[in-house]
Length: 247
Image (cartoon, rainbow, N blue to C red):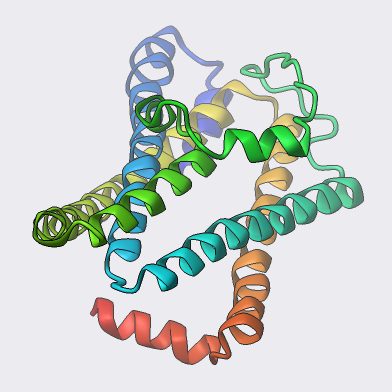
């Protein structure tokens, strides 16, 4: 629907009223608000859920193993995801021929040495790491905070209960944002279709399809394989139990 709406606005020649009230007005506001909502969720969702998980284990030795495995699993899945993305980009070359209006030149930073990555895992300022969305330092800080909560006795139990309640609130917030998703996606697609040539839009569409295909591959192949190999679990039974718990 968003693509059709944007295409129709493009056929009309992008009249002034449509540009002012729709493309630069309603559609732009809805699309950017939706993107901001998604970005807003990432840090509190990861932080609170990891603190809850690490603070729910009472054995310090278990906590240490869980913390190391959490960081290792994060690095492993991130590496697999990046490898899948690079391989897919090399094979299919998405976006070639596209020149969307909103495209901007970007400077690509040099790769960070692995030793520096290990150093940067420990945040000098956890508040700054949370504000900047630095996921690896956030994971390390969350696990360490969860361990400290567990080892703090009665005060830690009160803090743990607060984080458990906060986790419920965050999950409810995720549900609210997802209800807004159809409108945000509609506005983003409509704006892109109206401001791009048909060839550009189709090229971007191929890129979107490829991204979706890689995400599905990662979710249905990589994660089930990790569950089977590392967790000795049936992935489909695991997913069915998660679904049953949410209902």
